[in-house]
Image (cartoon, rainbow over the protein chains, first blue to last red):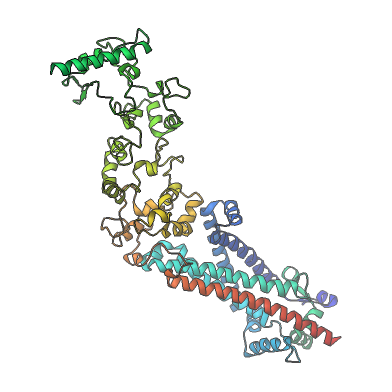
Length: 231
Length: 354
């Protein structure tokens, strides 16, 4: 954290590398969603317009697979960085799910319905961020399994009965839909509609959040930074 | 015998007299003049290729045909001399069958469609083997298509096409469509059922009704119809499930290489799946799929090919799809509920702080 950040009361929340990975992920997921859902809902006129825009079903498939490979490259890069770099290891520690996260979630529910009197105090990543992060990570790995099965259809057909491929197709489509729904609603609220960030949490572009926001939404992290003398 | 002969002569003369005044003097050659030679049963010509052209024609030749009241030179109007110095030209039906003709000869756009078709184009390019009207409709025995004896009637047209398209006709005859047609089932398609009547194009011509991207549409005309298929106990679902499949979607978006009905079920040799010769008999499925997907195994042929994930008969696929559907809906609802609860809680928290 630079001195300039301290002076303006801002804290770095996403380093430039994570912002880049996040941006790449965003673009690729949008491409995958557009090419994927246009096939899944091909009877819809809007989907048909998109397929035409993509240059027909054949090109649609090529775009989808290029995006998928790039996405996996992004995932591998992210994975290596998380496991090997100093910053990544620190983030991974912050992102690890503990018993406490489940308790936080339950307590926030109790608080929100008016049973508990205190709202949980979160560290750098609360249960919302962890759910999103691990949900997206596991989802990406799972959807690639069915994706590869369908991509290498000649290979799959040597080993599996047809219903396995039918199943892979159904699962792949619904996994995509599920991932999209979660990403959409979770982002919609947590980084857009949530009153503390409305209309948008700018950290995915600037990488910074205000110290005041951190104090309110992630008090444990705020206190930790204060203790370390960084704020 | 004498009386009979006399009667024939009288009838022939009568016909000549009746038809006479309607014609130009120069072109008028009466029937009895034609039958002087053509009326002998042995009147024929040996062609250079060894074929024999029968030239035997009597007054009865046109009987029963739509041209019953016509006479020889009505169609063979280029015949003005006897014996003919040159071989008379092939009859051009458009001599009478054109729009606004005075003869009252029926005319539709079919003749125009024919000129555009593969057959008409071949004629235009000078192919002597390409068919003219009379090659399909018959030369003297022209009858309405609805007349069972017509060469282009429902039950006879395949044989007519088969005169030139012999191998295909042989395949068709042993196919389920051909077998059922031979049994007198009128619902099955004969050649025009898929290829069209006059508007026939080569299968690789995009105008063709059996062009790769149009095949499923063509088969669906019958195979998606419950009214027709219920008569034979055939499922109509495959027509719909194909459309939803990878192959079907790609085909609808114009892919010519993707599998259509014919790629798997055959073209002229379509047989029911329980027939060991059928391309979709479980034994042959690996080979059939292998045409495009090399290495497809016998294991791949296990189970149903045409699957509708929206129906319970699809088994595990249906249940998986249903599970995911409710999982997605449930997740969505849970997220929305969480959002509203969180906002409500946050409002209280802010109020409490102030």
